[in-house]
Amino acid sequence: MQKLVFFVGVAGTGKTTVARKLADRIPAAFLDRDTIGGRFVEAILELNGLDKRDRDSEYYKKHLRDLEYDTAKDVCIENLAAGQNVFMISPFTAELKNKQWIEEVVESAGLSLQTVDIKVVVVTLQDMELQKNRIIGRHTERDQWKLDNWGDFEKRIEFVPQINWDIPNSSIFVFDNSGELTEEKSEQLYQFVSEKKATMTA
Image 1: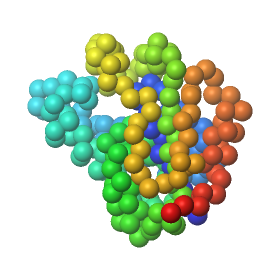
Image 2: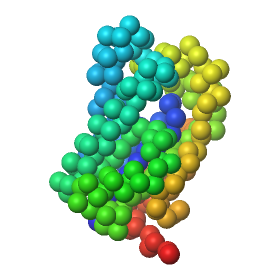
Image 3: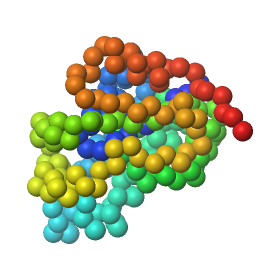
């Protein structure tokens, strides 16, 4: 059964690192929303005289946020339709709340919720200071706004997002990524993602 795995969580929790670790053992199309849309979003923001790093501006939210996510969605659908496992990396906060969104993804690929094993790995950190240090350590320009406005950013963080998709609770794994990503932790993640899809109950 094909796998569609979402690695979600706020900036600095280590979504991409966790997904890459699993990609070493589970072949999959690796789709990071920042990589797919980042250059275009930055260019459009600059053309409009805005800070290319600011993903919290009203302009970004109104004109670019959905464009970026919808493009990642389209790439996901193409890979699912081609028979690939897919790893999706981004917060997906609004999409997780929307039951129809995930149904549209699999149906557009010619599949169904019964034929795709959908998993959600919610990557979290217990320590906000560790989260900030990880953001500083990755040295990306798009993070500078968060660091300059850390107090406001910190208040808006949802550590565990609301998930309204029609998937079993056993298909959702809240993973605390504090500390080293040990082989034991990696094995735990691998077992979660690789295990067969749980049976849906009425």
